[in-house]
Length: 112
Length: 494
Image (tube, rainbow over all chains, first blue to last red; front, side):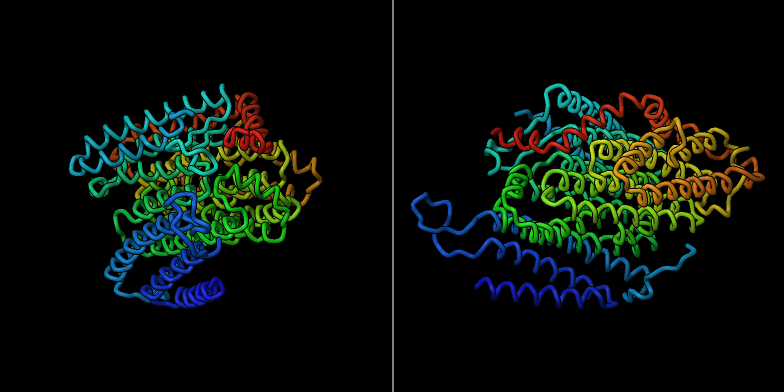
């Protein structure tokens, strides 16, 4: 199971790298979203995926899932959700003001 | 157990929330935020005094024992950083009262100003790696808003890049946390230090250490990850640029110093030599950027990069004297750099531009501004008896003691080029025949603008003249940093 998850993370990372390197604002945002998904999945996977009882129902369980990575990615997901929303609005305003979403034209020049 | 260590985080957070309700009333916002900033200064000084007297103080949140719960740890280094953050916070806030446009005030400038300080103080005081990530995000989200507030074309364009780069770095922070958690099974920094030392797996730890170096280097503007800084710091008004230039990159540097003195000390030959090489490149390319520019704010932004190099040079040399020098340098840099950015703001207010070629002769019309700038500028370049000299002296001395002559050579050259580019600003802006007519000169009152800057310049002079006590304090901070067992024992209470 871990192997499958790690391959998924690898696919997510490579797709997001490709998208971040493109020239359209929206694609860059999609790339960043996929990158944070990959990072979250990696955080969940790295400590090992275990099967068993929930951790908080007593000490009798023979094996239980590690609750900490789940708590961590919950926090990280909330943060990346908020930041993505902000980034979308920022990109929209940038598009409105500059009338373009091509990053080549958003480079700016040396003497301003 | 001491709740005091939580106050520098809680006070700005609560006051920031309260300020949201006074959105349409700038005067009330100014009064509340002024009082808050001063009370933060008092709290931070008192906190550091307590740490100095009683040793490291820790707070286990919710009474969950370390290493299972989240801890807040106040040691001398974090206490010093919290003081510096509050000093800059007060100065930039009072400069903002004079210069920030009411439109920006109404769109939640003050609340986000305090949310930023919440994140910065939290990052300094937390003792948990994931909590550090959370406070980084608090700080960054506030900085995204502050850097784009006002929404000019330039700001929007450069802010998008700033935000994208920082989210990218944050994703790698999570990746680093994931790797570290998988091999050590803990995220408490003190416990991490114990586990990393016990693990003896240099290969994988080196990979993780370099991953964290990339993450923090991206926030702290290290070579080759500094490319985003000059353009994005040029956009916002001077009060915000001064806060960012003084404080934000230094949070990245704090994280590097903390993690590479506490956690990743398993293989200094490898990691700290990489840091030393990066330091050399950072300062050299940063100062070359500064020499090539003809804009007040851009020159200062490039100087942030070159001076970040000096700080990590102290860490790379990794001796008590070098670390003490780096800490002295951080204190000096935060104060002087914020002052210089505020000078850029004051000149912009007077002349209406930051382009060096469009202004001249301000020394005749505004002598106070000129000479105060001169003091701050030569302090930055490291002329005795100002604060810049003693910090560089300690760094270079320890470089010579360790026979690392090449980095010493680079840092001396960079010092010379720093002096050159600061004098370039002085000559272009203040010498020559006055470019302003008498009416234009009288239009702006300089007194209120200089009020927040004078204490910073005075502090820089005091830090130079009173170098002995400050240097012995930095040495104490460095001793505490270089002996992780003090930190570990006070958190884990073994």
